[in-house]
Each structure stands twice: as C-alpha cells, then as structure tokens.
Length: 248
Image (cartoon, rainbow, N blue to C red):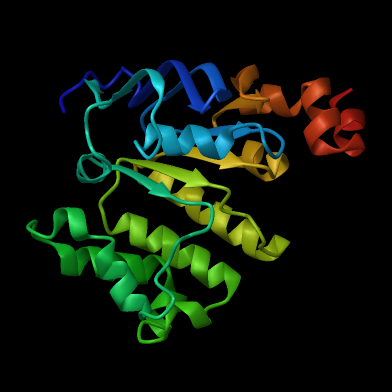
C-alpha cells in the first residue's frame, strides 16, 4: 500500500451508515494524518461506535474509505487487519476463559507467517508490565484497567499502522484513564496513527492533535483539538461550566 507520506493515512468521504431505514451516520468526512491522534467526540447515540465499525468493515456503508492510499471497501475485516488497520472495540471482547498470553497470541492471527512475533510479544509485555506479571492469569479475572491494557496489547500484536480506539476510558477510574491515555500518546510518538472515539471529551482533546464533534450522526464541528477545547459551544456541552470560564 504505497502512498505519499504527505497524504492522510485514512480518508473517509461522504460516509453514511444505516440500520434499515434509520441513518445512524450521515455524510461524514474525516481524515487521520500519519503519526497523529484524531478524536471523534460526541454524546451517547451520536453514531461514534457505528462510524468505527463501518470503517473497519463490520457494517455496510455508503461513501469512500481510503487507507494508505487504497480503497479498502472491498477488503474483508481480516484483510484490513493484515494491512495494519486494527480496531479496539468498546467492550474489549476478550476471551475471558483464556489466559492473557493466549489472548495476546490471538491478536497476531493475521500475521502468523511473519517473523518477529516473539519480539512483538516481548514489546507488549515491556509496554504493559502488569500483563507480563499476569500472563498465565485468565483474562476474565483482570481488573477493568488491565482488561483495557490487554485489549490494546492484543491490537498491537497485529502490528497496526492505524488504531481505531472505541471508548478506551469506558468504566475506568480517573487514575487508570490517565494511564491509558498516556499509553495512547506513547503509541502516537512511535509512529502509530490513532482514531479515538471518546465520550470523555476533556481527556480526548487533551491528547489529540485534531478533533471532530459528531452529533446525531452528523459532523457539527471540527478543528485542532486546542481550538475545540476553547470553543464555547464545546466547552459548555462537553467540558463543563469551568471550561467555559477558562475559555472566556
């Protein structure tokens, strides 16, 4: 998948997703540049999770999806993963009755024939020492934060160029959220691009380079994350009254 380094790694254009006659995402266009974090924020029911699922090929959609310069609409989910497009789902979808190590190894299913899987596993354990300590522990016995780390680690086993992260802070304590988001920033700094869907707008805008606001399936606003954080409408709706005062 050769493409100009100046071109966006992901480009979604005029994208719409419907459940029967109900359109959950309407005419959305967005881009993710290389080695950048782009966030999509918005309320529950705005269509954020649907958007990611459709980009991943889990739902049918109308519109264009170009990844690394290639139209990927005809690729299966497995082919998209093999190309480096990897989703970390909202519910994490771990195999609870399997060990941490087994869950991680399953993450490499799309690249089993490649060399270096042992090094990739060692890298995940280095990034997530708690997973290394619990490698023989069943995934279902982990804490919420550890399960999110395992979901991220499993995605990294596929060697992603672009991570689609769906609500990584969901159900986690504030201290754990800060830890997870620090890891996301570190991934960006190693060259991984990230499309982050989040209801926690404050945390998402704090680490993102660019952001989109999705409301009732349509893009309402977009801009540099710092600009969105200072936007009175975004501050009042998603960041709380204190943000309005600081923005003014």
